[in-house]
Length: 536
Ligand SMILES: Cc1cc2nc3c(=O)[nH]c(=O)nc-3n(C[C@H](O)[C@H](O)[C@H](O)COP(=O)(O)OP(=O)(O)OC[C@H]3O[C@@H](n4cnc5c(N)ncnc54)[C@H](O)[C@@H]3O)c2cc1C
Image: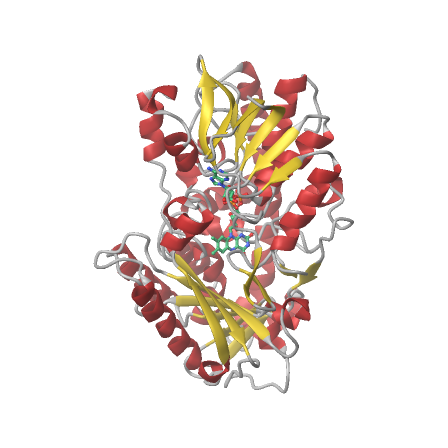
């Protein structure tokens, strides 16, 4: 083999880059191998049309861990976030609308247009979610204990976790169990009466989920989306200057400053093993790279079922990987616009509140459930739920003068279609329907679109390497979280193949632009390779 490294990272998604940066800063020789021509994975900015730099997949940031931002000094490496305020804008068929704001009292005032009881409840709801969020947040940068194959250390960690959990108090404990098991609908029904408020809040429970608001487990997805504080305020999301790829670029810059080498157009074809131990990788060009540790940023299915030989793993383990639920039903539509959409419910001159926030087109929870039920039958929803954002209202550096970008995250459009395939015609039909729905609230949208990009679940798999088009490298269901992620007994970033580690969203604490899986994996790798201890 021509080159030798301490650590070879397969994939330059933001998590792979965090692992590289932390490992390089600990003095290890690190190389990152990214199959695409650009780093970032799902956290990427691409010039889709001349002059338009688009966050092609992920579009908002909140979960990126403040500790990572600080330790890697990402601001110095170009990271800048614009907190999104208002936080939500939902329009309803009867012409009414609601705005949620960063300031919860202002939001409560808005809510009182729909229900004074809900306005009072909202403040309590936020306090309760904050308590649950801080319980989860404390786990994000920790390596989970193994549920099976336990060591004494795992047992100690379970005891510590149990004691911490008890500190939530009786009411907090009950809330915790509920949020981990309930549907978003049940969770919200217990608190609010106004369908409009519940619908707006339920959207966080279904983004990227394989389920509607009535599906058990979606309450956790809701919590997952409100526990970040990268903007400086918990639960408030933000746009990134230069698009989401600027996050990956800033992490890459920190990694290279620490000595890591990052290569693009370097697809790993196979992980090399000798006597059950990973010793390096082979690229599709045939080039071999040796490393003491191989770390995969690819999702678990791709890593274990594609990059290893069947004989490298026990049949039982392979079968367990095959059973990980990892299909998606989201479509990303990116639009280049000549002007801003005008909402009939909230006309503005120039950029106004609706443009500065996340625009929801989903009039009720029943509507979202119906959209999901169609997807369950293998059909793209005839009336999908839309979440739209216009980053250029905050950052006009990514477009030609006077132009805008709109990102539409649309659900549901299943990876497995019962009839037909994800060809251009199917994509166009689905995107046309999304535009038609948006036009019911902002009629000028049809006339201001200059370009359109439609990314199906199949495109996410083929172009971006997301198996099954699952945006999180595996569902965020309670049975696939924490010590169950990616599999029970293998939650500590190590794998049955010695010297092979996992660092992507398929590991704890899961998907989203968080950096936590990459950070935790790096800590374990550094510990194993150098025997050193750092962090907690
Ligand atoms: C449409 C969409 C919208 C989203 N919106 C948001 C959002 O707004 N906010 C948010 O926080 N999260 C969002 N997410 C989720 C979030 O983007 C992902 O969970 C996260 O970016 C995944 O990061 P990662 O580093 O774990 O993996 P990835 O980004 O998937 O990176 C894995 C990398 O490995 C590379 N790779 C795979 N196989 C190989 C190989 N054999 N050789 C070399 N390289 C390989 C891939 O090309 C890729 O670059 C969204 C995701 C999608 C798809």
